[in-house]
Amino acid sequence: MATERESGTIFGVLDCRTSARHLYDMNLPFLATREISAKPGAVMRRLHREGALVITDHGQPRALMLPVDESSFLDTAVDVLAGQALAQVRARSARTGTASMTPAQITALVKKSRKARRRAA
Image 1 (cartoon, rainbow, N blue to C red):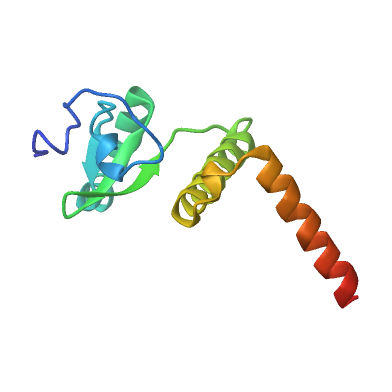
Image 2: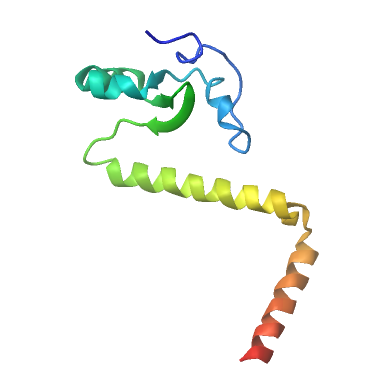
């Protein structure tokens, strides 16, 4: 039986740049990994009924399961992977301080990099 935390009953807003804890705030249904192997048919029915499931391992979110069909699979996969890549770029930018650069600073850095490459070639 899922706990209240696993059922995703806390409401709020998701900010993709914050921790995975905010998945709980979206009211997404949570599913323990053990349920996938124990009741795969029930999991698939629930997935299609709910629209998405957060897969947990020891109460921690580890994966997001989305329903797809033959016509939407590739588009869904590309969208999800592109979103993950963008989140990683944004996180790295925030860590390194480049997120706060002005357009003029970015232009100057690009010019400097191009000049260094020309000299190296």
